[in-house]
Amino acid sequence: MNNKELVRTAMTRLFGQRDLGALDDYWDPGYVQHNPRMPNGLGFFRQVIPSLPADFRYEPGLVLEDGEFVSIHGRYVNWSGKTMIGVDIFRVKDGRFAEHWDVIQEEVPAAQTLTGNAMFPIV
Image (cartoon, rainbow, N blue to C red; front, top):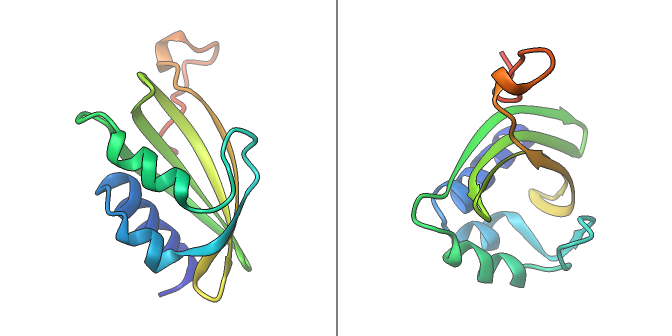
């Protein structure tokens, strides 16, 4: 499996299927987090994923790869009561996520944007 497939599979398993086993399969135990609101390691995910609301869903989008860095554009529906659009960037080392960065913002319907363009998906 290449790094692009690995990221799509891992994110779909963890967020889409709420499969905590994905953490053991794809995340490094020494996972370094660069989001200032999230701690290093995997404990955060082990607490948050089971607590997501029943109608939460994750929709993966475009995946880009540059060597060991892979980014995935995604939609998080009902993340703390909002639909969020994010780009998660991972450094993949030896088939595991070693580091993570992200940018995330609340989705705005296309009709409410200045351009009329949707935020997700990229077409």
